[in-house]
Image (cartoon, rainbow, N blue to C red; front, side):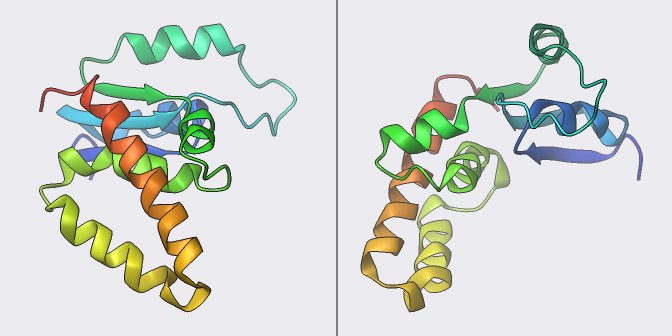
Length: 131
């Protein structure tokens, strides 16, 4: 229900801001900062950044850059999962096990690439979170 969500995870900033009415007062927002401009009147990037900075509990990261730095350029979603992991109340090892299971059929390299992005997102979030 509105005002009760513990966590909002989004790939891009406008998506995160769109769902703020559902966030609890002590809830967290985990979002990528790279906009997906899909409407003609998409807000200016700096305005979005200022709105996100007003939130008391937010992790805002360049998920694309984090994934790329981890040699996993197509795994920004895994970087965001890693950033959210400290707030989920699930042991990171269990999440990694789930990543292995989900991607196993695609081969070891895909598994390792996604794990690298997950771990990089986790590390990036540690610099911003104090749950």
